[in-house]
Image (tube, rainbow, N blue to C red; front, side):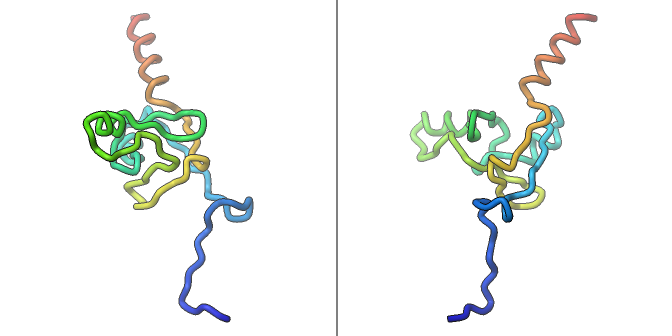
Length: 107
């Protein structure tokens, strides 16, 4: 049996078809707004193995059928989802904020 006109997509389950690593600098405002949770929120944080979104949690607490845990983030520029295991954070928003506070305190 042959299938014509079908495009196979890599699911990342094999080393041969894993997704390319995406490096995200969360201290950069442009990148914070480019990479969002699947529901479009920018205030997500990393956990051990997934993304946790504060806005999704607030929506869930207000009765919406939304889950705050995600295993992918959305790249608005490329219009595609990126699995969390392919994401590398080079600077985190929280770390950047702490560094800024220390810098201001030394002035």
